[in-house]
Length: 489
Ligand SMILES: [Zn+2]
Image (cartoon, rainbow, N blue to C red; front, side):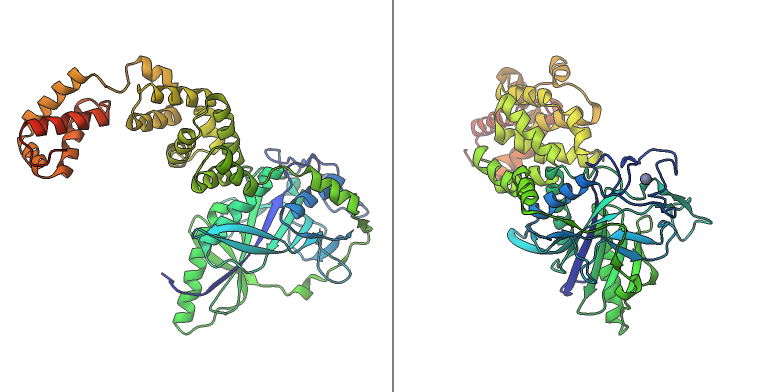
């Protein structure tokens, strides 16, 4: 599509601090989801005249955790800034945010996140971290801005505490953008700051420019999963404009996920348009060294350390450790819990990564939903049956599929006789039948060892996949030798 195009991507990630009980500047509950519209509000978060904001101290604590985990430099003073713009989701006509300049500063600057790109480590630099308030929610009744006849506004979300994490334009492909978001999400999850499974908890804006042309901002890409798709589309769109001799214009675009395209929404505001100034309602608060040290000491184990520990403690490959930790904290926690119950870390890691995640993705479940079906108890039963050779590795795949899709206990399958067949007499008889029914394949297999797999497949078919593959293979090769194979094993 646009191979070899030089791409620069910077991300702005908005993270709701879902660990908080209340909003950033008032005592309305921060959990606004599922409530009737405009019921989770008060004069402060509705921006009524005369209402005064009071900072939620715990929000500062949570922001510091993130700043330290991203190796950022924390500011000595917490200053809030008014960012002015008119939009229906913002009743005050300004958002309380932070800014680098005009006597304001963000809570933290600098820092980095490491990602693994093409098996080498890449550093993506962080520019700054802001604390700010979430605006209300605009609802388009038909689901799209372009087709809705009218717009609804719900202020339940207005004033929820957000962190805005801005990167330098160090990201060079949509895939890297996705990896960065996955890694950042994993860090936030391990810190306990946000629950990424909540709808809208993590929202991404992406700035993208190619070949040094103007940059375009894609606003409010719904979920991390959509980021890669939106960027792929936008890069192809810009590449086509440049190729046809046109010029990419600097603008803001929206990602329309139902149609899979970006749409121009407005010319980008300039920084000056926002008329930033420090919020006079919120006096600056000193951030002391003592507080920073206290937060630093409270930091939990973070993903990079956890991956290293998994490799050392459980002898996992880097690949398996990385997938388990970064995919979801719940998966990493489940892995450790299962290993505590029944050891065999290598088998468990491989089942989780190669079989469990495959079916979770195929059936469009969350990892948590999948883990409620493939419980630690069921997992340990599978390991036991595998060790006792009641299950072959082939049958195991079937078990995982059925446990996750039908929420069935492995014991139910075992008691129904759905086990590996290792009975030599029985399998010899099946092999004999297969030889009689497939004389041509038998002749082929005598000359070409690869053709043996076809005969193994026929035995599997007759036994509904239950024949032990290794024993079947042995029986077939032995029989071929007896029949004068030219390729004795
Ligand atoms: Zn409120």
